[in-house]
Image 1 (cartoon, rainbow over the protein chains, first blue to last red):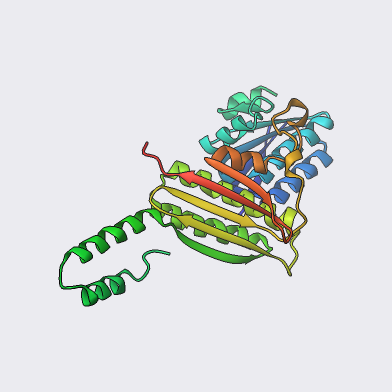
Image 2 (image 1 turned 45 degrees about the horizontal axis):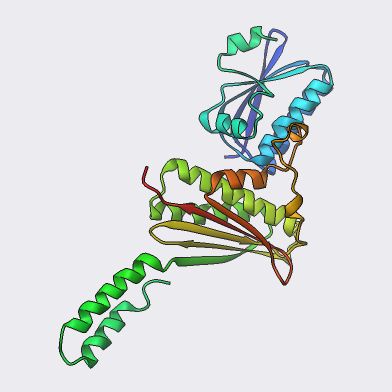
Length: 113
Length: 176
């Protein structure tokens, strides 16, 4: 299964529910396009819900970093929600876990913006 | 490849021996030893496409499961194979339809050895930037080799004489 993205609005926060695999090719480009589209629409508060992400590779990690930089540079905030163990481990060994603002509870994540 | 037609070896020993069972007994012992130490190797020449990344992962994980790696190690092996194959297809062969990726898996009861060789321009792997350095943390690429090193027990890169780069990845089967 490739990546599937669906967005919903909770107040002024755009929540992106991501499911499937974020890997080189379709998976990472879909995420990149979605984040650029949101920045283009001046959506400043973006919460990526990665709870249903089964797999992420170095290219997918690169897209998370790219998205973070793009949103931050446009004056917005990108935060992560519901990392499973694999994704959390990957972000930890690549020292990115502390770069991102990571949450385990959606309501708390929404309030943190 | 194991075993080297062991049944025929045994039959000929019986046929040409003096009738004693001793040579047969020794042959069986030797066969058991070979089965334990000589790794079986599977080799494929794969197209320079992203589909090949999936094929290589599937092949490696099937054999790794047979060897007895647990789920945690299978995840690490799968990821290391994917990163190595992406490296070969994208950065080595640059999706060139005329170039192949040689992918091999050798395994025995103790370890799994994977080799991924491309036919591209050899890249300067001695000077790959450290992705954990503060100034590189927000780079969008350059983590593949680091992840392979993190997930495997042994890792080696070498330039091939005929051009291209070969990565060798080893995972040991250890009781947990």
